[in-house]
Each structure stands twice: as C-alpha cells, then as structure tokens.
Amino acid sequence: QWYQRRVLVITLEDVSPDPVDYPVERTNIHGVPVQIYTGPTNGVTYFRCLVTDTDMVDEQVSVLPLYTSILGEVGAKGRSYQQCDLDKMLRTGKFSCSTHTAASVSDTDEFKRGMLLSSYCLDANVPYMTALWQDLLSQPHFHETDRIKALLESQVAGQKDGITQNGHTYALTRSRSHLSPLGELSERLGGFRQAKVVQRYNNGDIQDLVSEVAGSHYVNMDRSLMSVAINTGPQQVDEVVEAVGELLRRIPDRVSSKDYSIDTRPFTSISSVNEFIEVQNLGVNFCSRSFRGVPLTHPDSPKLTILAALLSSKFLHREIREKGGAYGSGCVSSSQAESFFSYRDPNNTGTMEVFDRAAVWAAEGRFEDQHLTEAQISVMGKQDTPIAPGSRAIGHFLGGMDLEQRRAFRAGVLSATRSEIMDVAARYLSPDSLQGNVVVGSETETDKFRDLGYMVDQFGATN
Image (cartoon, helix red, strand yellow):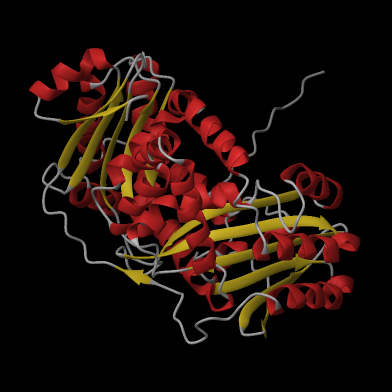
C-alpha cells in the first residue's frame, strides 16, 4: 500500500499580525508601582523586584555585579549563610539577585540599570518567602568576610573556563562597548573589565570590597527606586499583595520624588576600534564585529532583525562553521548593535574577512526570495515562542516593548521586502560605518594583531 507523504509548509500568511497579549493589573503599594498577572501558575507565585538607580558613582557601578552575587549568598538577621540557604531551599524554588540593564525602546543612548531580585515558591509559602527577603534586605551579613572571600575566589577560579565556554559573549560585549553608552556599561558589568574588577578585589584587602558592597546596599535599599511584578493564581492575589505590601512597607523611602526610570548619556565615539584581547593558553579564537544599531521602535529594527537571521543561516554558518571549522557563528541584532560573531574558531583574520564578505553578500542581494521568507518566519517564530505563566507580561516590565510597539514590530517583519533588506545592509553594515572589531585569542597571536594596528589588551591571572 502506498502512502502519499505530505510536508506541512508554513507561509507568512499563516502568521498572525497580532502579538499575544497578557493583560495585567497595575496598582501602587506604599508608593511602589506593582504589576499583577493572574493566570494558571499551577499553585506557584513568582516575585520580581527591580531596583533601578541612575545615580550610582563609578565604583558603585563597577561593584554592582559583585554586590548582587554576594547579597544572595550571605547570612541575614543573625542566621549564618548555611541556615539561610537551608531556609531558601525548604521554602522557595529559586532565590536570586542579579544586575539588570535595559535599553530604551526609543533611543539607543538611553537605558536603565540596577538590580533584579527574583524568587518563586508555592502559594502557601509566600509569607515565608517575603520574610526571607525582608531579613536579607534589612540585615545582610556583609561581615562574613570568609564567605565573601570564598565567593570571590570561586569567581576567579571559574573565569578561564567561563571565557573558554562563552568567549563569543565576551567578544560581543567588548565590541558593542565602543558603540553605545549601554554597550560600555555592559562591558563594565559583565565583560573583561568586570572580570578584572573581580581579580583586583580578590588580590586586595577584603575589607575594601565589604565597604563598597555595604555602601551599595545602603544606596539601593530605597523604596522609591523599586517596581514589582507578581505572577500568581487568581485565588491568591489578595494574600500575595498583602505579603508583598508588608515587605515594601519595611523598606525605607529615602527619596520619594526621585526619577528612577532612565539614564541618558551622549554618544561620544567618533572612530572605529580594533582590539585584540590576549588570554593565555586559550587555544581558540572568538571574533566579533559590531555596528551601531537602532532602538526597537525604529522602522529599520524589524529589517535588521531579519537581516541577522538571514546572514546567520545562509552565509555565516556556511562560511565560518562549515568551511572554516569554527564551532559556531552568527549575527545578532539588538538595540545596541548589529553584531557578527564566531565561536571557538581556529581562524581569526580569515573570519574577519568573512564578515566583510557577509555585508557585501547581503547588500548585493545574493540571497533567494525563499531565504528571505524563511528568515521572516524564523523571526516570527521567536516572537511567538510559548511563555510559561510565571514569565508572562515580564518583558515589558523589564524594559521591553509594549503591546502596540510589538504589533508595529511584527508588521515591519511581515511586510519587509528584498530591496529593504538590501538597503539596511548597505547602510548599516558599510565599511565606512562606525564599528567595533574584537578578536579574543592566545598570546601566540598578539604580535600579528599588533602589527595589523589592533590595540592589545591582556587578560590573565596577574591583571
């Protein structure tokens, strides 16, 4: 018996022009804006608190990642860190503090910065979870210097493996740092510059770090800097709001009229930058080239996002992964930059030449109409990835686009034409455009890149 095989083909006509919307209730608790999403969270409540501060001095910015990592790992209110860890394990499913940055959706030179507190637990444990946050935020044990020193040493010990496994992220972050204020901040918070800050404090007096961390905590524990998002079931809203309200009530409100929303800095770079980052005994290369991007609501943003998907799948993978032997490659579009990268790459200058050819390939339209359609569907597929109830409506809370902005972005993706993709490739990926070129490699390549005119930065145990 013969069977006819049928292949399901998705076309652009199958894609809805409307984004999925998750309505939220917005309220105000003790002066703090609170967003509440109610849905099928399966008996679990999710809590997130953004602390956004634009007035931190330089050293407070540099120490912010250390502060957030230490805050969640020390004891509190007379209990050791072991006791606190046990309480977190018994009462919550996750309990974390991290740095947070978000680009403005309308201006490349505007951004938010601060930290994100997040946790979740069974509905019945919400009062215990908020009490744990209250203890940690009111009386953290920054005097546990042995614990802090151990955390520092652990970070330093993992740096080399981190670069080996995620060197493309370091290269991308460094290349973007030359193109926008947020790019520069991201390098300070999570790139090679931050790694050197960790090493500096690890090699110095631990009391210096304790003083900076304690100062950062005092500055950030200000209710006027906070905003909260709650995802919970509809039957639990009143109990959760009451518990969160009690937590917020106990946090000082030092500057109730302070604007905690946006930081703006003028863009000052005037020329392209070429950098080689030397990492001893690395053995492979990580290459990146970034061009200045546009904010998410700019009319060219959907086209640049399509261009990134098109270049990744139809050119860079073939030339860098299949022909060049790298473990991976791609093009990433963001509000900071349009960026090429390679991952665990045996080549370096050859890969940078591929980046040159990639821009020409796209600008001259050497792709098929079917390739463009596939790229559009790929972008829309990522837009429509199912979101778990605990994360619904969080994108906008963290600084992303609102519903109407997302609808406009989708329309831009669905209506993009070949000529428009060629146009943005020619304008934004031009050799004359401002760009940041970064290669991360071993010391055996340093002289070659110095001779090519690259600035050289060394990263190692002595930094």
